[in-house]
Length: 469
Image (cartoon, rainbow, N blue to C red; front, side, top):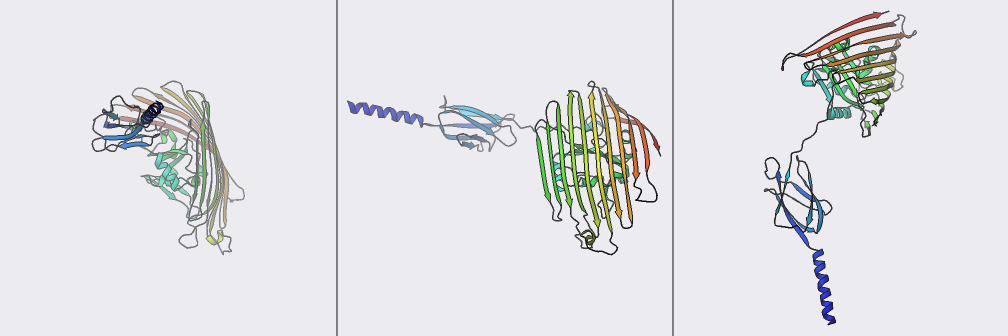
């Protein structure tokens, strides 16, 4: 009797163990949701079980050795949205084929806002010809040339960055063949690089903190004045997002150049901030062996902090500061390296640039928006070549109040601005004094009207009064 009891107990334990170790399977069919055609090469995988399969030419796959219980399987295929299902084993009818239908994946494109036209219309509805460099293209060119923005513009059709100095590497922007003085360079819609400070601007702007670059090819003097007869280039800075961003870049070249840049951005409901800092160094380089620099020696420090304030849903305030300090020396390699040279040729540029930015945007209603902009710029520059020295201090300001009024078939953009410039030449630089003061007051009005579905006319008028002494 005792032996029979032991046998029954062992039999019960064996059956229980077999149930625990029981393995199950199922067959799956993966189809396109719209056409219901089988998807070849779709993947079904249970991450915790490390089990899965790939569909064959009929869209089917069989997965074996599944333990009892509930398990989650993920069905995925390139170009389709992934799908997750939970299956319980043993299944009621293991002979059934489970059918999964996947829908096409749709990539969501990030909304891009073009601000240079000051219009609420899309690019397709604006007669003005405008091009934009952003996203991966901006990142790629920034990696290729992290020290300045020449690479961003040099490969765009209709734009040429012309080197104006063989030794200091100064450059200007030419659009549609016109001279560089007819192309306006803006930062967030503000003319921070005008006048005496213009020739070095392309060499002193690092691209890491730029969100996009907008280029208008053709006259846009109604909104931006006589400096934009050929066109304009507007550099748009990055805005802070709800997710913090920290970017760092280290770059070295075979010509002993060094670029170190960092960018930080963060935002909450009421405030946001961005901080950009960089150090760029170039060593005098003469690849042709002619004794003159193809790349000058320079050291540059840049710091751009910016504060964003959101007091109300319809109001945004931006306060920024741009600071650049640079020393640039080109010419005879031997002279730059400290050797004694008879009658050396060189060009020395020492610059200090400080500029502020204030932008206030407010939407009164869906149809009417107003904006106030102000910038103050301080630029101290000294230029020296053999037997010649020139230096001066440029202080300029720009203030503008503009509005945008949109109706069903037309849009009005208008405003007024005040541009002041004061240049003081150092007394020891030249016998002839180039100092001057200039005040420009402007008022402008532009209308865009849809005559028909295919015809849109843009017209504008600008009046400027210039007083100088």
